[in-house]
Image (cartoon, helix red, strand yellow):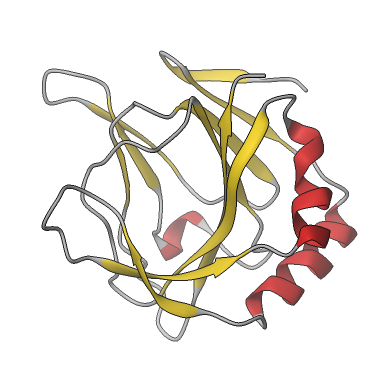
Length: 161
């Protein structure tokens, strides 16, 4: 995979999956069973997200992007104005897959990384982009600003093999 450096220990790669298969997989996840329970951020942060644990079929589809051991795999969903506080993830590395073929930068929903001393860097949910970052890096989901939409990302939490 051709990883590009976004910031220290934050990388991205574009056009990782077959576009047609990724679109079908996104559609399947989009229409799956969602629960409004996932919390991200600091202790006491009540910013909730929509969550869907991935099926084994979906895990198998996404797992080729890493040689690490997947410890958790799920989809996050955000409706209008939902966002999270800065937080770190479990595990060693997180892989975040932007799989919505209809999303644009104008729709919001970017992922923001804290890179020290009140500086941040943001990447937006570009279809067929994968972010790879050290799980301990502070990050958050920015607000979805697209009326009538549901921003979906897939997260793989991994430990180094």
